[in-house]
Structures are given as structure tokens and as C-alpha cells.
Image (cartoon, rainbow, N blue to C red; front, side, top):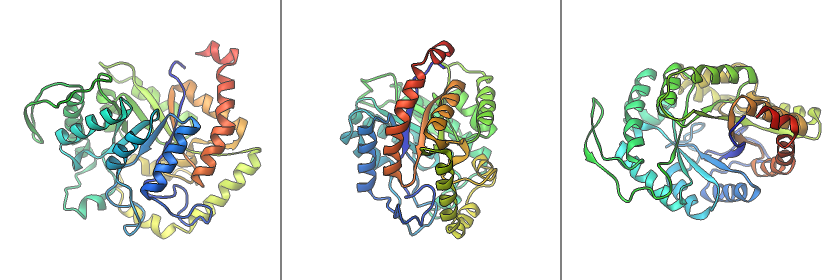
Length: 357
């Protein structure tokens, strides 16, 4: 356990994470709501926010959807400390155009920007706009080619690159980054091509929420892969329900599961639009849970002390960043900061924790 423990929040780019028909959290994916949420997260002491990238709302096409990259640029000007991670699907932007945008947001934020590379799962997002939605493994071949260019451009290199997908000649971007070597590259996905990609090109691997033993196996597998860069770091997505007692937390979990059941028609359409080869879909099918990207599958449902202990257990495996979801988001985000932050800091300061680090 060597990396600093960090906590982040998912921006509400497409509304509620657990249930769309929750009277305690009416649907709101607006810029104003997201601005307030991220500014409050920064004030509460959260370290990072992840802004997922979708052209259309993945739950319902007639629902609002925040744009990730314009929102990231605006948040870069409004915030002072929090890390801003914008997701990107390589097929939607030429690597030089995306790299230029990334460097500009890096400058606006004064070195707090990061890219989250995801190779897409929602077929509709491509079909509606006439873009080719390639087969799963082919998307990773394209993504590997794409990130090999982007990573060099945002590091200030002059790039000449010719491949089936791209043809760049002496391409260099100015002004260069004056804050660090380059923005951090996060990579999502758990398939074999995704693991190979993050080992070769990523700085941090985002893992979907799932039990401790499954996360341990994933980390061990990726750590075995050849890597020329510094050691890979790890992040975990998790939906949190923490209360004074475990019974109260599980009661809230059951309540959210019941609310989420009302969204069954929406989820059926969403599953039909999802590439069945996406490993995230298989992870979500393992057990009843709420939230996206594994949701409550990470087991952060319980008393305050239990949740803090489970976080420390994941951290001992190598999880550096916990990217968290809540519902109702703002109230539960504040509860986590109030109740879990001090418990985790207390545990980290204990002689036992220091001996294991």
C-alpha cells in the first residue's frame, strides 16, 4: 500500500446512477447541477471527478446528456484543486484534435486534467450518427493506434505516424504543457484486449465495482503483463450506501433496488444496445446491485466502520482512487465525506496500517 488513497465522484452527466424514478433525486443532468456537484465535491475534500462521455443519454434518447469535454473545460476554469477526468471514445475524435483539446484543458486547469480512454459499448451512439461500430476487438486495435498518437502529442513530441487508420506528418502541438510531462491517462475495460492496452499505454486502470477477491485477481493479472512505463496504478468504481448500522444500509439498498426495478423497460433497451462482448455487461449480471460500472458490486454497503474497513482492504490490494456514486447524490456525497473520510484517515494512521505499507 504505497499510493495515496484518493476519492472521486462520478459527475451526473446523465442523471441518477441507481434509479431514474427516485422522488428523492429527480432527474437532472444539467450543466448547472453538475457544476454545483463538482464544486461541492471539491469543497468537501474529494480529489477527482470523472465526466463520462456520451453523445446521447444511454438510458433514454429523449433524456438530457451533458457533454463531457466542454463541461471539463468549464470546470477547469471554475475549480482550483480537484482532478478533472474526461472520458473519450477514440472513434469520435481524430487524435490530433483530441490532443489539442486535452492540452488546452490542461492549461486552463493548471495541470489537473486527465483522459479516460474507453473503447465504447453503446451501439446506438454510433449508428445514429452514421459512424462505424466495429467489432469489440477491432475497436481496441483502433484505440491502441489512437492512444499511441495522443500520448505522444500531449507529451510534446513531434509525431510522424502512418497506419491503416492515421497519417500524421511532423505533427506537433503548441503551446506545450508547462505543468508536467503530460496529462494522466486512465483506461477502462476488463477484456483481454483492454488489459493489454492499459499495460502498454495507461497510467491508471479503472476497474468496475466487484468483490475484493475478483479485484485482486484482475490486478494480479495485469501486473504480470510486460510494461516499460512506471508501475501501473489502479482505480475502482463503487456505489456507496453507508449508515450508522449495516441493517440501515441494507434497507436503503433494497429500497433502491425496488426503485431501479421500475426502470426495467429502459434497462432492456439499454442491454439490447450494448455490445454483448463488453465485459462490464457480464460483471453487472452477476448479482442484484444498483449503480453503473459495477455499482454496489464492490460491497461498499454497510455501517460506516464496515465501509471504511472495506475501502482499506481494497487499498491494500493497490486501489489508489475510488470513483464513487451515490443516490441522492449530493446528500450522500456529503455524508461520506463527514463519516468515512475521518475513519479512513484514522485507520491509515494506525500502527498496523503503517506496518503494512
